[in-house]
Image (cartoon, rainbow, N blue to C red; front, side, top):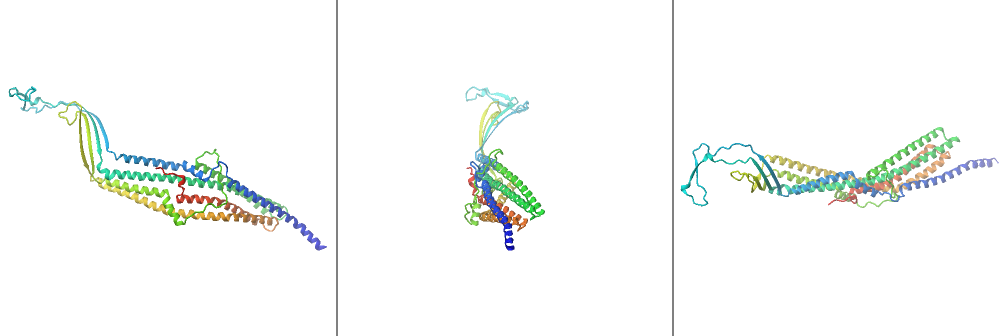
Length: 497
């Protein structure tokens, strides 16, 4: 009888425990389903008319102010090309002038001299009658003065030597600089597109972090409620209750911080696209758990592709060629300058008419001119050395950029590999963490483990949720950054002809 009574008592004691454990297991299954639904609402349910990462990147590239600044620099480079082309044309210049001379009484010809001039009246005949000769004193002769001087002059100059030593080289330097500016525009747009795509994915990450924070707060509230129940029956201490309340407060703060971070991430997306805060912004892309297409090619081939494709490298190469041609232009100043010229003068009085008379008269002249100054030699050589040093500096910057590209490609390729592995393992981590929390909560409610064990399991679950979220996002952001490192994001930009 006594043994039967003991067994009955034990059975009555354990029955509520088993029933409560089964109830907590059912609640755990429901919680997992709700958790998946909460994540799917943010990650895997694209909204009609919503933005995708590519759409955000394309708009960011189109509206980037950095790209607009580069476009203005390109406009200036194009203007310098036009100016260099104009230099091929002969130089036409004109002068129009008026000069008023001071008035004075001119001295007579051979004044005070006994010299006389002998002449004969004009008869219309070519013969001279000796009997009609007339003696005229030389002192009576004077030259007329014209005090109002007018001059119209047009000059055409052909820089013969500059065609071979300066103009063509200067035009080539300007075209290389323009090409570099085009690559700068393309590089700015490619970077804006890449940053826009990453901003989009980080916005989704931030929204997912809010879900993680809400779930963590719910876990802590459940934990605190269970602790209070156990405290009521004497199976938990006041310290356990206070620690539970602290954990709830901390989870509430984390939720507020996550929401603020999500708002900031949304603002960054709007800023990248330059859309108003009142404009609708929804995600139109599914961030599911499937692994994106793998990256093909080994590391060495990818680095070689990046070196050949990156706009930044091409821009520096074009600038190097421009600097080398500028050095040739600077060196040309050390040589003599040969030019041909022609003038047309229409003046009153014309300086070639003697004596001067108050009348308009046209004249012209052509010639060649060779000019050189020894003072220009050291200055030209110094300027040429300066331009060559700039070319060498740019070339060194190119090599440094190539080294950085190699490191960047290596980092981003490893980031893709790590994200893919994390994407595959995060599902198992989350499943195990959920089960660990379920078991730990049952044991805690049964009084077999303390509150710390359950807290550790809940912390692991929160970490597993974040790992799953980050794995999905990182698998995509890592590929965006790798595409940019390889120069494959040219789909977002076009090089103007």
